[in-house]
Amino acid sequence: MTDFERRSIISGIGQSAVGRRLNRTGLDLTIEAALLAIDDAGLTVGDIDGLATYPGGGSPAGAGFSGPGTPEVQDALRLELNWHSGGIEGPAQLAAVVNAVMAVGAGLARHVLVYRTVTEATEQGTGGRQGIGTGGGGISGSMQWNIPFRAYSAANWLAMNAQRHFHEFGTTREQLGQIAVTARRHAGLNPKAVYRDPMSLDDYLSARMISTPFGLYDCDVPVDGSTALIVSRAEHAADLDHPVARVEAVGTALRGRPSWDQFDDLTTMAARDAGAHLWSRTDLTPADVDVAELYDGFSFLAMTWIEALGFCARGEGGPFVEGGHRISLDGELPLNTNGGQLSGGRLHGFGFLHEACLQLRGEAGERQVAGAEVAVVGNGGGPIAGAMLFTREA
Amino acid sequence: MSDLPFRVQPQLDDTNRFFWTSGEDGELRFLRCGGCGYFLHPPGPRCPVCGGPELTPEPVSGRAVVSTFTVNHQPWVGEAEPYVIAIVELVEQEGLRLTTNIVGCPVDEVRIGMDVQVTFEHQPPVWFPLFERVPA
Image (cartoon, rainbow over all chains, first blue to last red; front, side, top):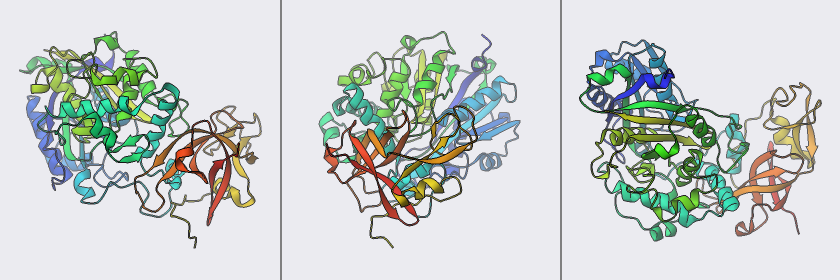
């Protein structure tokens, strides 16, 4: 195999404290996570020669969303870099990881520190969750086509995708709710998850409505936290005293129109393209997957990923998750084993990477899926999406 | 000043001004390619189908069908809930869609597939294209 993906492993992982309103800076959390990941990878700070993040510093997407940019992290750790990259455009949050894997595959770097940091809970303070553009002033670019119609949030945009799915395929809130209820059950086994109390389907159904068909528990919960991982040359695996996640394939395609309302199939959106692309780059198949860590900024996104990655046919996500058996830890497709973002907290894509690595290494504690050898991660949804497939290398 | 509930205003420029002010004479307009007849939205410099450069704003019927919708209950701003956000598809061309609001009808009566017609809400300098149910 000569594909660039298989020249890389995730040699180390690290995660800062995770919680509601930690009142720590993004840089502080990032350095905590980075030093843990570097140590886990059997390296020292001086070994790091690449640096990547999503979305990079100074993103206008709201307070606490960006985390520190690469210059701040490089300077804080006094890194001497051969390659560095930060940016918001690409295959969702995974853009940073895919870029790092490409840099390693191309020989530009040997050990890349990749991180994603959020302080949305602290920045949000005690007020409610903010919509985009509600501060007044005019809006330009692509957001001008939905914000003026009081569609202030991805909750509104994705609710319309879900409603279309309900209409075309007969999907129900009872089915969708299983994604949230199952995630909560898994969160109960994750000491770092923010919502761990049991939640029933009745609790889910009776929660206040946000934007039909989404109720409160269809939406993830803002937190503070930083996740870091080290993308290393595959040869480094032999130097480590723990198993690692080897990169098997990436899914980075985007073929539909990159727009919330112009994408051809409103029931699938970009995950469709990233999912198909992923399987075109590997000999493995959906049947080989032992653990699925699929973006659930909203419950419906995890359902679209289940369909997009071919675990069921298009439109059959509702029946697939019904009752929650298939997506439980002992089911055929254990889903979001750390509680996802719905109950674990919105670490914005990178929490799924961290959990996939823990599962493949056999270090997931009470929530460990026995014999996990292959894990898939989907990030994003709506008009941007990226996917990665990992295998265990002992 | 208007007494209407708050809307974020688009920043008008030479590319989008025709769209956001089109309702002044009661007509909804999209850029249309003079070469192949394709309606282009959002506006751009070239026809993405044939590459033609002759794009001019052209009125459409304003008739559309609800592709999907949501009833928003969350008080993002806190003065218009509950309200309906929808994606509608104009009858002139498959896939020619707008995000909009459905107005003039109880929020629980909106359905996918419902026939709707453009109506404009004037909050200077913009005429916002909203849609209302076509009487059966």
